[in-house]
Length: 177
Image 1 (cartoon, helix red, strand yellow):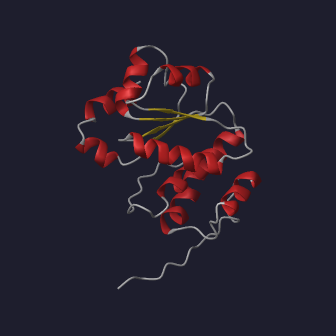
Image 2 (spheres, one colour):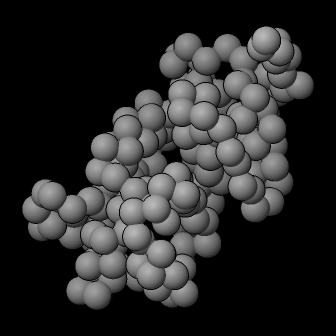
Image 3 (cartoon, one colour):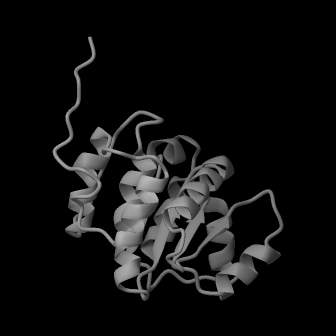
């Protein structure tokens, strides 16, 4: 038996940038899903979060919206989103593109299986968001193309899956930087 969820907040209630609110509405989001309702206010307050929710429940928006808002308020903010697969990285980039429309905030996707040259070029343009798989990120760090010293915002999306895939040492090395 499913319990009906009634959100405490609405997207219009969240203390986020007006352009971001318009993009949320344009995407057809009328009221927050449970993970969004609970997580967005806490990230906006600057709190660390561990969120657990099933696929398709709005986790990506739950972390992207407050982090986009943070970057919109301070263009010096950098965000690293670490994901286990190229497919998830691309999916997050698509959501990012929809939510960041008109905000002049940019992301680069750094994943294996494609040429590294374009990714290096995109990193040199200093995007605020880096969406990466552990292996490719580790490679870019070793090549001294990317440093994470100024990256105060880190999202480990599907962290359990990354651990299952054997990325534990890569993640430990990356987070130690």
